[in-house]
Image 1: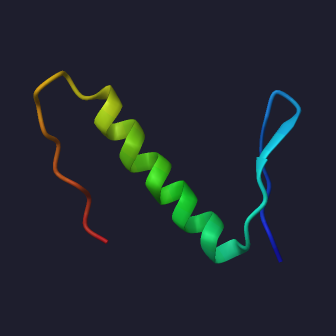
Image 2 (image 1 turned 135 degrees about the vertical axis):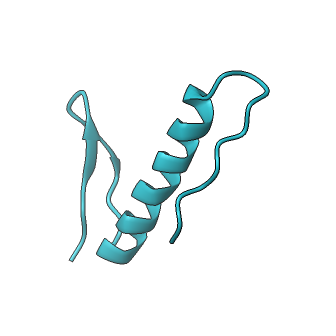
Amino acid sequence: MSVYFDTGGETLRNPSNGAGRLFLQQTGVFKAELDAPRGSRTPLPPP
């Protein structure tokens, strides 16, 4: 089994389900860091 990550009609990634979950978790962390005001640190959610 695998999961597709598409945007604008283009497939970005097609990893297995486990790697897909890891990819989503990483993008959530990156988004949280990029949305944070400059110089501030936001705590990571518990696993």
